[in-house]
Figure 1 (cartoon, rainbow, N blue to C red):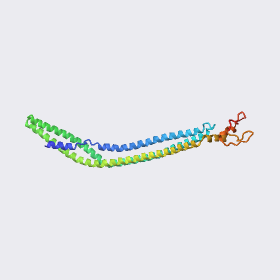
Figure 2: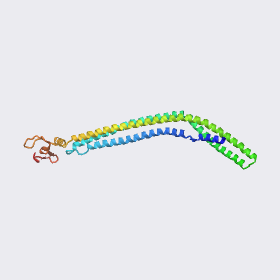
Figure 3: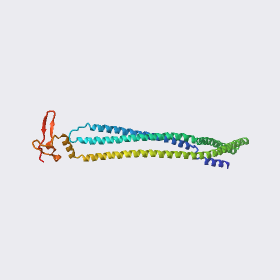
Amino acid sequence: LEIIHFMKLDQSLKCGERNNGFDVLYHNMKHGHLSTKDLADFIRERAMIEEAYSRSMTKLAKSASNYTQLGTFAPVWDVFKTSTEKLASCHLDLVRRLQELIKEVHKYGDEQIKTYKKTKEDVSGTLEAVQNIQSITQALQKSKENYNARCVEHERLKKEGATQREVDKAAVKSKKATDTYRLYVEKYAAVKSDFEQKMTETAQKFQDIEETHLHHVKEIIESLSNTIKEIHLQIGEVHEEFINNMTNTTVESLIQKFAESKGTGKERPGKRLKITNTACWLWCIRLSWIGTKRQYCVSNIGKI
């Protein structure tokens, strides 16, 4: 009966005998700072990509001025240049806002380190309780093995008809092993009670820290998403403006601008004729060939 009693009691205390939960939760808390650092690195990489894209768009906008300004298509390059410059500005604005967000992430990372240092001090008692229960668990396991071995040896000697001296000697060892086993079971029960109380409080503390961390990180990601969304809306407005500008840049308006900038008069040679329709611009443009100082008069091409 005594053997059965100890075996049942020991079995009830056996669950989670390695007691590594504290170590798992503590390192998980420290991993929170690593995730914050990784998030800052991710945002920094995104900012670098946006900055490189903004520089490329600025370079592209400048190159629009270098394309040929001859012909009726020339004014369209101004539309391209203006739109591209605005796009570059949008992406540069995103870079500035991402850099501000990175500063917030770093500030939060510093706060995490302070929280972890304070928490480490607060849970020092729990760490001690964990070490105690791990130590007593090992001692309990050894005493159990010794107890079982002594009991088996005692029973074997009795069954094999050993001398009374041998049986008595084995009985003494069995009783000593039983007393030691009982002592460690009682110690384990006391240590386990202290461990469970402190571990429950510490586990809640770790959970509160983790929940706060996740809420804060989600707020940062939400801020990142809203920032990108706002910039994309601005980019959309630039594209819409470009579409409207191109819609308003009609074929007639391009021809009209060309006629106004390159035309040398609105009268046909020998006869006054005021242009009322851009379709007749070829009637009256006189293009000067500067190199040869000859004038080429384009007139009477077709009939109006």
